[in-house]
Length: 492
Image (spheres, helix red, strand yellow):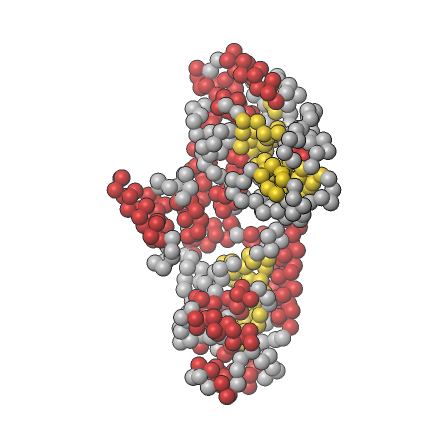
């Protein structure tokens, strides 16, 4: 059934179908297939058609951080400029959800906002089908297609005087759903053109995200291209953290995407070739077993520093993996933190404190230059003449940009945990405190759960207290979290 020119007549017809179907009487008509299937999913999730409003999941105070961390935050200016003026004039509200159906943003006709508040159409509420039944936002996320739900097509009777149109927005990197854009309004505001408008706006948002992804790809490619070029013609490729091939040699030899499991050190391509996987600060370098890089001159030299976590510190130097002992790792980390360069005196102070000895530093620098080359580690002042990327720098940038999930994903542990160097201790503490604060401020259950299993959070009682408080009783992860919290309480 499509919405006709007479919304009142359509309302009556849909209401009759609604009552008949719920009473088990199919002789008086059935809803459209997409609606019928949604009703079945919603009823299977124990949604009561006489329910009043959706659950409130996020507190108002939590929303600014949650919004800032969400990918759709980047396209909100576009959505507002495209839809809000139309929504305001046509007595609609624009709503934007995340992939789980939580409303994160709302704009539109001021006169309608009070009515929207009364039925739970406000930020922080959850509109997935299993939370509030058939509705445009929840159903568009369920079927991954633009949807219009009109009047009594809503499973919950509260919304029979509303009409809603929504479309999903996809991640241009993975293709997964990021969230939904919705236009909702009173029954008399229904218009068939809204479906095309909302769907076109979702495509505009995806295009803008695609442009931003292309810019990020190019930055990653430029930072790490020296790793690839240093292979001097041997097979190799730069890969994003999600497995997309950014650049490869030989050209045309590579798939668009590969699947990499956590901790995997090699992968077999579809053509049967085995490739070694070298982690970069962001992404990976693939290279053929047995291939090695030829010496390269700055500025075509790339250094990737992997210094987070309990494993041995490692530097990827022009595509070649070099395990390091603690002292050269401390020097490289300190120089990476000070790209402008350091005098021997200043470097000694940052590494050893007030007892620092310049002679000792010069000896360490001499040994490190023999390892990575005098062209890379320059003197007067000491500095790295290379494209330097680091895992700790990646975490730092993500925290500064408010991308908490990305920061947590990029951080396997503490910075050089065995180091006592003053500079390393300070940055290690900065990252640990910053990551913990960002996770707690976001107050997102999935982020909290990930952090509670992270080396920085596994013994953190406050994190576990917050997680137990926020985690639904039926969450299958809850028993493990409660058990761990009980143990932490006993230890305190």
